[in-house]
Length: 278
Image (cartoon, rainbow, N blue to C red; front, side):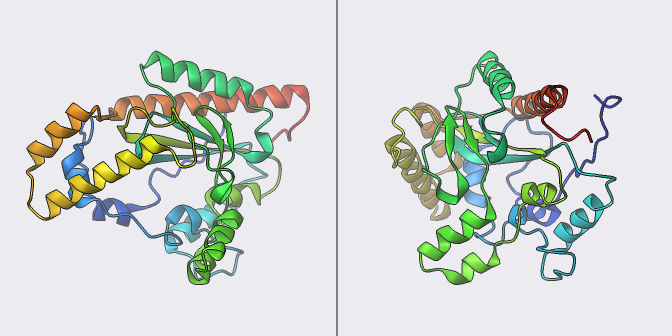
């Protein structure tokens, strides 16, 4: 793969976020502990998420420094990119979830087949959710959805009457890469830190299993913060309820499977003459 393709890799775009979450991210942990996560997790508010913080143009000095640095670096590429993959995680889910560039949703059969097969081979179910286009999430099939989009994000918060949050959304990394020309395949992985069985069996919206798990997690979090339960008690209750952490190695195996399948998908379209040759 290193010989066949030119790679532009950003190993870590949010070191400040990592530092703020270090309390629960034990280095080289095979998986994460639920109680530690619930008691210590820090997540940026909507509109402050670094994924939706890329410059609107070359003179946008309001974007965060990390985003501006990546933006400037990508601009040095000699021509458009063929594929862009943003590797994400999510707190909970029935299993892995793969997000696909909307313009490619009808051309990713190979990618979907490979990601589905690899997920099943590792013993996981695919996550599933029906959000009916909210924030740009349009369901394609179980385990697959279109990626979010800053325009839909802004529209979502404007509909809620929150113009201040809506105004903070800038382009995502996916939109930034596509803004450089060509027709790149953009992908996002969403690997759950914790597997919550039953989610997606009744899509909704709302999904009753997803709502029940969120309520249960919030209850455990309150007990931890109020010292009304120990970490050991919460961990035991979570295991009894069926929640389990997803090993980090498995998350990375499936992310790599998505990257390879995405490259193969792009090559298929190149051979068919329906995509740029860069």
